[in-house]
Image (tube, rainbow, N blue to C red; front, side, top):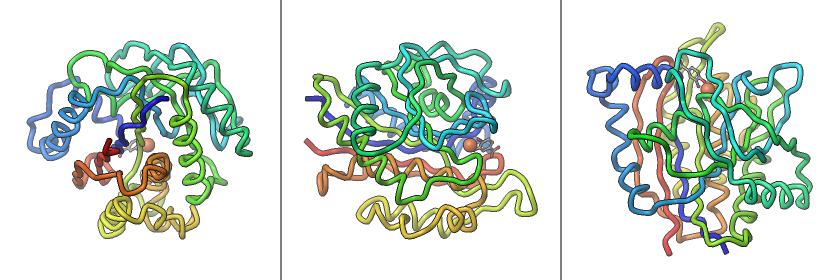
Length: 282
Ligand code: DHB
Ligand code: FE
């Protein structure tokens, strides 16, 4: 059976792509952000996942407001990058792990999740940037399964529902008939609001409490409705639902889940940036 080896969570912001492109990693503005990543790069180099299941939110690139699935799972052999155009200029396509896509899709439908199945799917900065941060040299040596959660247009799924989705994805990975090593990734958050009266809103106290909760009490944030999460973290801060889904995927491993790294830095662009890594001890 496949082995679920760990979970990662990272913020995503298109400007990071621009900073990478311009080589600004050591610039005083960017340095505290990029300094968070080498321990995760090292962990990945040591543990070498073959596949990454990526919880992320599309930003209007693949799904627009006219058709907005709550949950959508990629089942493509290849995913092309379609960012807004102010990130990394051109990223090569990502290879899909089609067999695991269908394993996850079949399991989710059997567990009564009404998902959209995408045999063609463009991916944006949310899906691609963390991979660039994890493997800054060259292409990411993993195939991927993108799992999209709507945080763009209301109504949003609840934190409780996203946790249940992540748990079911974790079960599907554990039951996958494969000798591959799988890691789960959450891309989004932490607190930020890009527009409206609260543009620039950041809630450090909540972010830190949320990150801490994921270590030993991962269901803590499921007490909040998505609207309450918007109130606490901003209209885009609700992207932290991805972190909940990722952590839920690891939950069946119980006490064997250990935090291996954490970084928090305010701000990059309008966003409080967070990074966490969890390992499932063998
Ligand atoms: C920013 C943050 C995001 O999550 C995003 O998708 C786009 C932009 C920002 O802070 O600039
Ligand atoms: Fe975003």
